[in-house]
Image 1: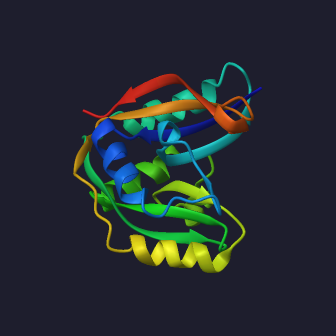
Image 2: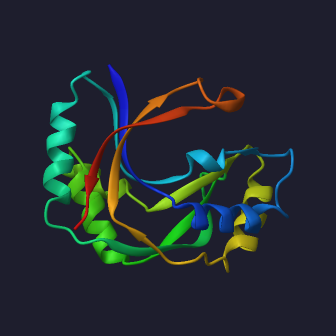
Length: 173
């Protein structure tokens, strides 16, 4: 079995801009995610058969007639006072449609929110303070012209976090 998700990977300029913006907030109170792992999740598939044919077919169909998107990272928030995220701006309507089309189960659409997870922790007040501080953040525009099918290897990355491996790429033209 493979643990899979579809994602837009961040270009270096967007990642470095966010690293710089987060630098004043970083401390030991939170578990900060690795910048090399930052991505915008389009759909999470969980454990799938090793051939992943169903997922690949869904992504091929979802991306077949889509144009590249102009996106930027913007704003911030928290999920359940435990996960700090940075939002996504730009071609949001087209991004929402792409996210919906990448799902295997359309009933999951209500759970989708375009974001990049940057930290996790248990201090809800600290999370809320950081989200407030980042609410005015806006990163540089970038073109998203690829959707990556990514395998997650839990516990195999730096510091015991996940290691991500791109297993296929689908192009937006």
